Length: 60
Image 1 (tube, rainbow, N blue to C red):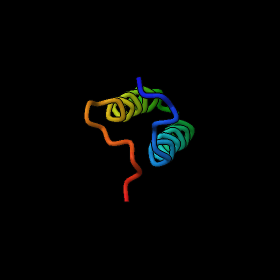
Image 2: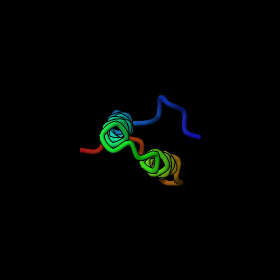
Image 3: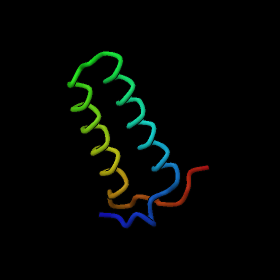
Image 4: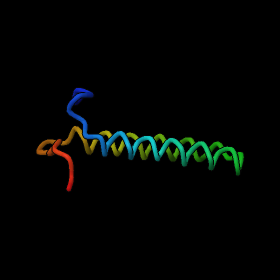
């Protein structure tokens, strides 16, 4: 796992956006399937951060 300090601010922003969208979708549609989808998306996003050759420098 990559240390939190090596993750970019963009990663935090993306993960926060995913969680906000998940919450809104769950509240609006009362569909627990959205929680499973969000779990998959977050795991995929975190794996991308830990992939070999991942550049932790901020994207410009």
